[in-house]
Amino acid sequence: MTKITFIQPDGESQTVDVENGLTVMEAAKLNDVPGIEAECGGACACATCHVYVDEGWRDKVGKPAEMEEDMLDFAFDVREESRLSCQIKVSDALDGLIVRVPAKQF
Amino acid sequence: MTATTLAPEAPLTSETIETDAIVIGAGPCGLFAVFELGLLDIKAHVVDILDRPGGQCAELYPEKPIYDVPALPIVTGQELTDRLMEQIKPFNPQFHFSERIDALSRQPDGRFRLTTDAGTDFLAKVVVVAAGGGSFTPKRPPLPGIENYEGTSVFYSVRKIEQMRGKDVVIIGGGDSALDWTLNLAPVAKSLTLVHRRDEFRAAPHSVEKMRRLVEEASIRLLIGQVVGLEGANGELSAVEIKTSNGTERLPCTAMLPFFGLTMKLGPVADWGLNLHENLINVDTERFESSEKGIFAIGDINWYPGKLKLILSGFHEAALMAQAAQRIVYPDKKVMFQYTTSSSSLQKKLGVK
Picture 1 (cartoon, each protein chain N blue to C red):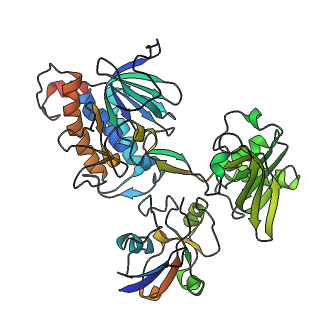
Picture 2: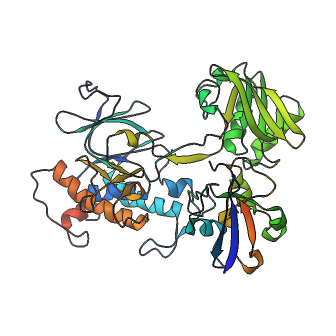
Picture 3: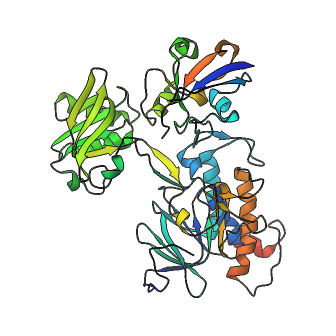
């Protein structure tokens, strides 16, 4: 099991245990993390599972692929550290990952 | 029923379309409903807000493979849509695309009067709501106060180019809509600025090229950044604040066009007086009928204990719904269950005999 921490805009944080191979979005949905909507169910087709990857983890998580970049155009307040959580696969390398939930998915 | 903008006694016009069933939504479940209704001689008109059939399959994941449609080990959203369109061809359904049913009311004779946002007017014996996650509507950027400007200074679509003449136009986005409108409005706008979060565009390459040429000629501006604030009064926008890598810039703006794609909203269905369960239509599992007799709901938009939002479940719901609809459309007909493999009357309807 890998630990992932979600931090809400108000600072509240929640650490969850996830099975490797799932996505960060699925980890959020399985644990009822607020603010991750995932309207399309993980098809990289909606941009409502937008997260900000914590500074120290950006290299390990990597950059979005082209399709994900395109989809991020539909998110709001997109930053350098923006990713769609349905496109981040959980593995041992991400144990301890911290992501921030944006104030709004839209 | 509560609702609606249309009084029950509103006179029928020569344009009123009389039919057996109105299917709201042309996604997989709506399309398959046409098939199941058709086998029972129930004629359907289908209305969808999108400009083509397929619903989420077409809009969200046309290229994505689906693995759990029975007997199709792998099928893409578009392929499934195409196959369903082929399957319902014998029933010659009439499609009304790019329209949304806005009003629904029951007539004194028990039939339903429905009107679309484009003014199409129907009279039907049954209504099948197969609206999935709701109707696709443009995404509203979460900018404080934006709703005060919608329709006056903020537009999600442009009906007339002339409407933009002499305006300080700000277009946001990097897809085809944003680029097409940038090119179309550049000649009439007083000023035009395209705002996008990155210097790469999803839009067709030739539109991007044309846009870049206009930027070089200084006919328009391209800003890489994001709109963060609106200024104005009484519904009239006067300026927008844009955050770029060089800080925040204030730009005169009297018309803003945000193109952030579509999202699904329940929409007018919420106002039809149907019993809802967390924004889904409550149905029974024998007829898939809502709390209003004659109004059925199938697919992702309905709810019942144990509901699974699967295409295959929606297909099953369509079959049972059609049986129940038959009792309303043909109250005196003796119901006889038949198989397409053996019934010559069904095969005749399908045009295979």
